[in-house]
Image 1: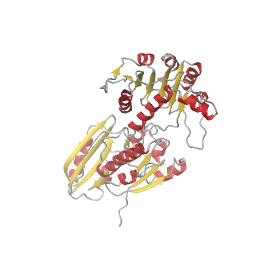
Image 2: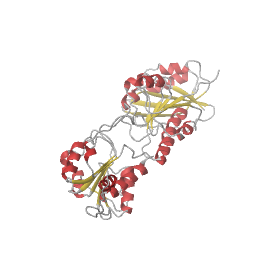
Image 3: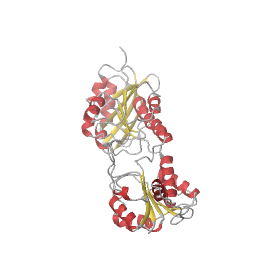
Image 4: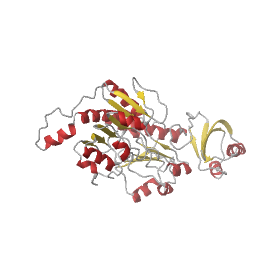
Amino acid sequence: MAKILPRALLLENVHADADAALQAFGPIEVKRLSGSPDRALLDEEIASASVLGIRSRTQVDAPLLAHAGALQAVGCFCIGTNQVDLEAAAAKGIPVFNAPFANTRSVAELTMASIVMLMRRIPEKMFAIHQGGWLKTADGSNEVRKKKLGIVGYGNIGAQLSVLASAFGMHVHYFDIEPKLAHGNARAMDSLDRLIAECDVVTLHVPATSRTANMMTRERIFSMKPGSYLINQARGNLVDIDALSDALKSGHLAGAAVDVFPVEPKSKDEAFESPLQDCPNVILTPHIGGSTAEAQQAIGLDAATKLAKYLFEGATSFAVNFPHVEPGPIESGRVRLVVPHENRPGFLRRLNDLAERAGANVAAQMLRTEGDLGYAVTDLEGNLPNGFIEDVRTLDGTIRARLITA
């Protein structure tokens, strides 16, 4: 009888290189659907999928996960994971992976380009020349050299931007809620409010959390340095868009660049609407910060490799909702038992007692816990009796269990 291969369902035009990366540790059947399918089709397709690969449009909520009886893991082929109900996935023993570093350079380059374009007043001049105008003037146009750049969020993208901006001769300042090592001559600021009051350009590079939601309020926007610029190429819920529009139209801000929005079209056929469309001194882009060939290829390889390592080794080192375990390759003659379980006293003892009764020797074992979830990886030697995995699945505290062979 032919062995049934695990099945990967890839949506939203995940980069083609993901296919080979998924199969680097073992054979996988790969099925692709272009775009984000409607809910009925997604419910049908996910029922038999071992892993699901998505980008930003597909919403993976608890009701969808209820249809996913065979699903072992979810891969977000992007930075963010807010399109996935992480708690619901963890409760079902499903780790979620992403690619948080793969598009760092692409986003940083777009931000740096936006700074140059805004300070040269390119948006107004471009719109004018398309309409037959000729704004050949230096009024309001400046070099970026010696200007103060304020980076909010000094993570991977913020730090990469810091290097680029320093090379342009900008004075880089940054604010982060955690201590971060400065790159080059960048300087940490002790508060967000001080940063936005002093800098000529403020750019946001923070995740979407309850703490960052609407962080650029109307009050903060109007407390920015007069004639300064605001850039948001991070998350759509960070900025009060109406207040930003008012600040631009009143002349308080000289310009802005926005790549992410509170409400974005779900497809190219849906119209985009924003009060910023009426502002000539704004660069608007359709959520393309990481949309370069290089970034998409890197994301495809990164996320797919993590999914494959989980399927064939049980590795969860880079999961965003799971305890981190890196067990390495399975040695010859062993079988690996992976068990997400409830984090309650006595589970490991019960699991090992069950293995002993089955006549198996525990050759290696790793256990990590995080909150209410535990994850046990056990390498066993010996011939396991029929029904062993079913006994593990019915063990008190088990969420799910599977065996991986070398």
